[in-house]
Image 1 (cartoon, rainbow, N blue to C red):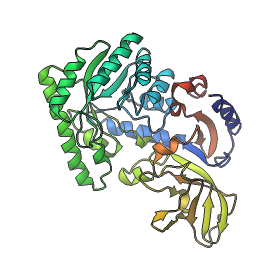
Image 2 (cartoon, rainbow, N blue to C red):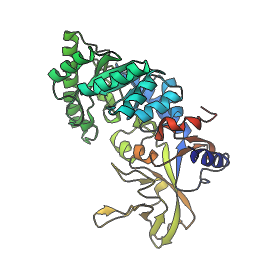
Image 3 (cartoon, helix red, strand yellow):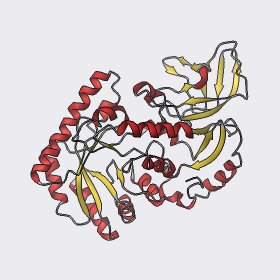
Image 4 (cartoon, rainbow, N blue to C red):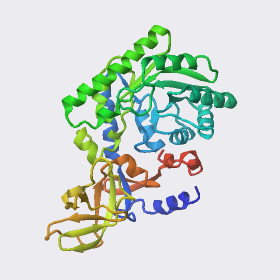
Length: 386
């Protein structure tokens, strides 16, 4: 990671400067807003029977994961083993990889991390269970497993309760792994804009998971964890007394997509960009597909400075440019900066090496995005404020 450390040192020279100082495009993180979002979600979850294990795929940062843990989260969720290993190497424990970890190198990394802190992973295949078990035995560790069951997303997960029970029985015959429950992610419900329909779909998906948990109980298999839920369904799935934990995470930043879907949280992550060309009502920014996520929605211009142009059936977002339509009398000029709320925060973060931390409109710190690189970033180390 020799390329990251010098950039980090150079970036920290701008600490104390205005939030407009970083070279653009730059990823700005408003820390007071982050703290309010974390506290707000913790307060909401306190009234729920389920616990919160927030998803770190959104921020990929041990610093932010620590904030979530300090606010009452029971552990952290990740999307892959490399995110998990980076968090474990930063001193965090009780990590769930809400995904399958397949292949000898990744299984070995999972087993290594499990020797440092608790690791939980989803499985839906007996051969994969055997691979993880063998890696854990070689590393002298034990990996906790959740049988993933498909509850309607039709992505990963066994397709029947019978298959789930058979896999649970198989896990019980293998050393190096331990069954701790089930995972049933209702991802197909998250994007439903109709609130009543989203509730109905989510409850239907949750019922499949709970039905499997009941069969597990009757067969003597562990259901200490019955996991589901994301940000779009946190208050539906989290209210189910049979579900032990949910994995919502986007609340920490929110974005253009999630603001419309689940209002009530502050936009804490923005992309600072510079006007590089102006012609009448056309403004061109130095930010595009390579620096901002718009998977689920288009970026929103903060402060009302125009909107992303729509023409020929698509939004004018190229690799290195975004074109805005602005009023002819707009004061924006070449060299001015403005901020965009990403359409989708998780894929935006994946474009960057570091966060510029903002408090009171000043840069107060710079944090590397550790888990973008996995444990290889361990040599950089967390910032002093961690």
